[in-house]
Image (cartoon, rainbow, N blue to C red; front, side):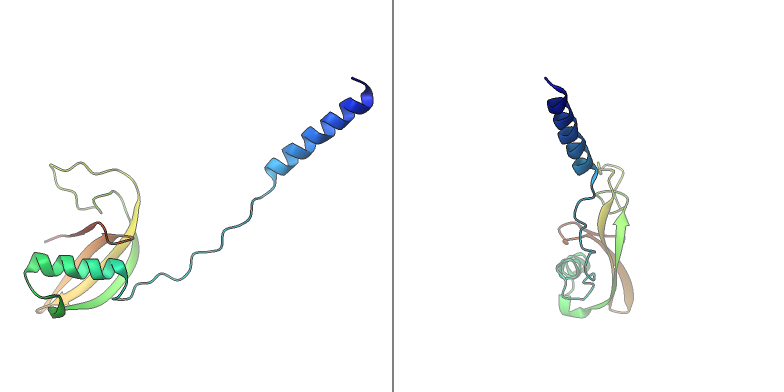
Length: 118
């Protein structure tokens, strides 16, 4: 290989290295968090609480919801006989009022995992 070919190969390799180090397109920041009473996680939380309390969902008033990162897949409420995946689980702390009492219900982001501490 002559010197021109070696320089060309080194130049191509250098460009590949530089291209690999270049910043990728940035992700757009997440949009506003939907913490309304009609969000899927809130509807699931209300239905779960109604079932646990044995009352109609209409008797449960949505108060607030806040995004939380739970410490495990059991939303921080695993029992002694449960095996919970130790992984940060994004979700919500949803507060309801029903029949004069306040209740905190925990969910994952979608509402497929729901728990509350009695």
